[in-house]
Length: 387
Image (cartoon, rainbow, N blue to C red; front, side):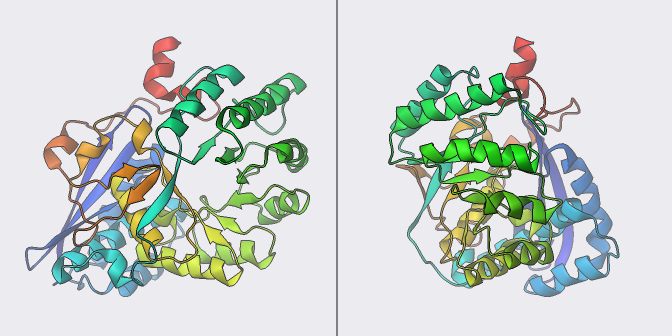
């Protein structure tokens, strides 16, 4: 079953673009994948087609050779852009393999470790940046059945915060904790906003609210910096989504200070690469919470990773807070029941692209939201309307 063609599809939503692939074979079986990278999804699409000649004619079962060939033969680093392209193709191969064998992917990469996957909600705080508004929105999330949620209370902070802004941010966290009670896991997102000293100061102020973790408090490019933050806090640190190689992950883990890793499967080489990354984390007694801020195909890939990974803890989801048509881009999107994903049950990913719906949402060229733009959390369509 050899690769004969690769097609790509760009989809625009109000806050980013997604890129999906369809990998065709000489036996009429196809697989789908995703390589979305926010503002750079069109760039990833170009990379997919530029690398296409290196894998034409490969058997879809040769996923290791595919990843190695694209990593080595395409002699350029490429970082996240290159890895998203590679991962999209790797995921599509696994989808085709599963379809050929009549098995879900998780049965082919270790088997089922759990019957459902606990989710944490993201994207739910499309409201005013006040403690009252965040608290009200958080209560709705709990009523939907979620027992974990993530949010960034820090506005447009960069590097440092004014005392007034810092106080507001901490008050938002306090209001959410009071609203949802002690049993709900609160994951505090920082989007790489802070200097080391600011991150440590804020992290200490978060400690009374017992968050599940403090995520990406400083940029990822200087690994000793995130380690320094972790060493000073009782709050667990979560990081990893911006890393684009197992070597970077190995360096981070070598310090034995960060043990919650939210790697992005599209940066780790896809499904098998993510399983290997999770094993590296497990060797350091850590847990993984795969990053999933992309489209529905990437979320499905995460669920196959979660299902077959013993040290997978929680799964990020935007699905209940994205545009209502997102689920219609694919067939058989897994249900979220009482804050848990049900596992995909069909062969491969358990879904396919709905190309009619895909074509209804073309790529948009207007700038997406910036995390450092006022009211970014309202998403592009709403923030532009209110501006």
